[in-house]
Length: 203
Image (cartoon, rainbow, N blue to C red; front, side, top):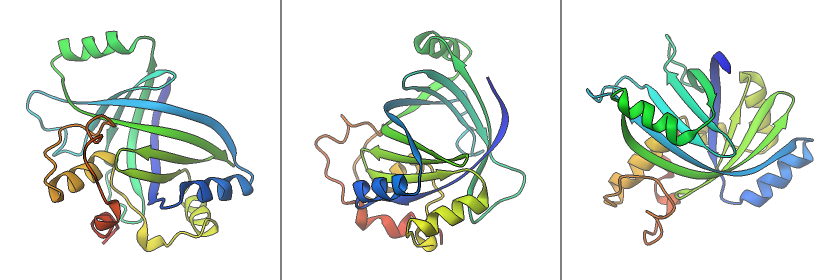
């Protein structure tokens, strides 16, 4: 079980993911493998989690995890920062059923392929989503900044939104009418992410 932690991260869009992957490996990072993720986000009956910036998520990759995220007391405009509680569960479907019987509503589903790299206690995560490919850097603030510079990213182009917030922007602007961010949902939908990037960057 992971007890209370503070998650600090940023994202960058990856127009050439394989180049970034090779750059990460050249820094000495170790790949922990690539996994498919299915994430289900829950709401309470009053549907106040989203407006309170709270996330209750059940994730399945090679394991199943229940995660609760809430905003910190003070805002950080340089990094995406959340308080996080996470616990591994033995059975995804049973945990899903328990949450529903407790009154939580499965509101949104999103999917991605994630390759995880570790470098000096910092995680670098290449996420292939239905919207495009992104790099998340998670760890200590100074190490995140240093790695972003080493990998050649423009700090002004960092993204502090979560994937559902990115999905909502593209869904709304593109008039897609989608509910979930899944690969099947986007199979017949063309999205040109570059048209939306300015709305994802930190203002």
